[in-house]
Length: 492
Image (cartoon, rainbow, N blue to C red; front, side):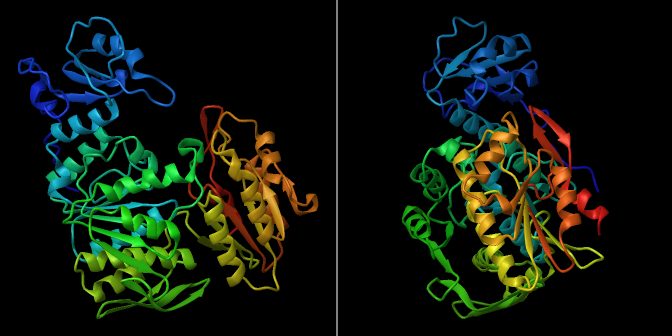
């Protein structure tokens, strides 16, 4: 690959220009040069602007002196009393929003130069993004995908990060993409990113709402707050943009009212502007046709299940909104392989089926397990292996256990990133209300997975939920190497 252009790597911006949209007093800051923006004091070097953010675990205001020792030329703070500093201290009401604004200014608003498609919702973001990326590539656009799978762009390292990176990383990424002649970016937008203003200065052209179900309530407290946070993406849309919204359910109808841009409603039945006219499911994939005005998109997909049909509908709708021809959209959907860690189906020599899926919410459990139950032979058994993450919303644990028990002949309960919580406590919350004869509990995931694979019969199915293609277990602050896939592959 030819060397990537990163023209902003050594860029210098005058401080007064950088903060013109966030600081309104008239003091002259034109003699201060800034060549880097940081929110972590350890990354500060001479000439950096340090933005002190009060995070979930650390308050950046406690690290201001360290940032100055490392060379910070100026500081943005929230007005806390931190005493007199030897460098300018610019006080703002919201330092997260300030970080977004100065990053956009520093990198010269790269999202204005790109066609940006943002996808939000509890489930389906990654698969929808992958399908749209495939449509864009099939159309010969120079496109990039940002999200849970990392950065997917020709010539770029596939660095995995948060679903949506911090605003400084994100603006730099978009600048590098624009400078390297990329034209389209499809990105996942998490509720945390919206709440923390990580995308506040991104100019979206298309926004997509997939669905909303119980998740992240440890962070958002209740569903109404969660919905309002998601709706920020649609409220910040320009009138020249387009919002694509699944309107089959109540939250979709509510989201439609939040959009500042014209809305394309999409539906699994014939109520949406773009909708299915015919659809068929099997363990080999999905086929059917979608109607969009006078256009008809006929497709065969390797993806499995009704929820993936919803993701296909979102992606097709984005393609139509971008005026991509139906033939190209059909070919792209057909050529999109199974998404890593999403309904990946493995067959062993003795006809056992093992399905790996990243599902980790009650809603995604229901969708995955109800789909597989319908498609799996009723003569054979279905087993489910899963666990629940530690230091996350504990209210969903018993619900996930109940859903697994509803569909599974046998349940194997194992750790899944227990973090700093006691694994036995997590497991006891999962098993609350489940018949004791229906499950086995393990404190080591590998032991549980190996036992499950050995104990299921020929023709049976084992559904392994939660980790997908994650390659670690997060235990007591340490990421220990671990992979469900590697263990499964030994048995294929």
